[in-house]
Amino acid sequence: MVIIKSDREEVVKRVGRSVEGIELMPGLYLTWTPREKILKALDGAKRQAVREWEERGEGPVLETAVLELSEDQYKEIRPMARSELERAASALLEEMGRLLEKMRSGKGGKNLLGWYRDLARRYERLVNASLALDIEPTVMGRLRDRWKELSLEAGRMKS
Image (cartoon, rainbow, N blue to C red; front, side, top):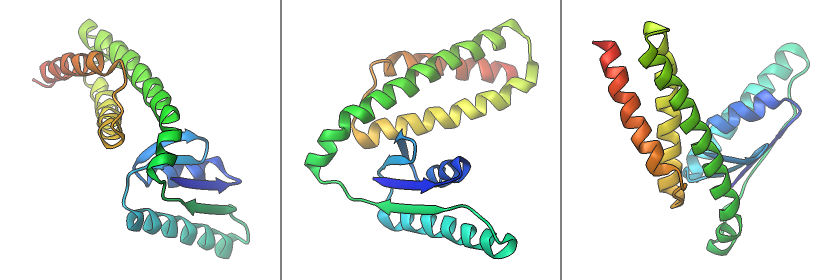
């Protein structure tokens, strides 16, 4: 578990993206990233904040904490993780449907491939989170099917 507190939301988001995990609440990340990698990412963020203070005389307030959860503690927050994965999977499923419609309509052309790559990254993160946390969102089967359709359509567009 990583807790990130700052007076700048963009700092919290940037630091949160540097560790593989899911955001349960603003600034509260459940992660499976090795502790050393998390500490390295947090040190980098702290160095950036110090650099801003030194260069401009002002910068973000940044406080962090890394907590290792026991099995019992993980069981207590698992429902929160499940609901966040469900929400993310449902939103991704809807967005994949919108992109698939655009691709099939022929509107947008090659510009849609950037959107496709963004969805590919987000889909991969969601699948990794699901596997790492051993939580299968109820829409995961439909999400996999939609991903296959989307990948086939993207392949047609590229050729």
